[in-house]
Image (cartoon, rainbow, N blue to C red):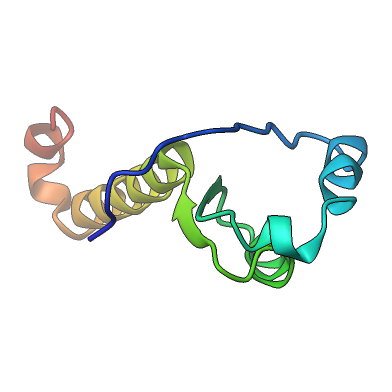
Length: 93
């Protein structure tokens, strides 16, 4: 369980230029970073662990929700295909 933390700085890294601005900080400063929220792209996770060794990665809720929604939709379609005689009933859910 994560403990409450005081947020002192927020960075939005949306481009290579904004990432370069963070790379100039010393390792000592980077070690002070405790939490980072990112999407689920594996190279980002690897990069964050390299740049910020003491940080914990939190997955962005948008991407988690998108992944779960896709999985539920796929399951629903498979259920409807396997129960074609009840398709009309299942289609409303």
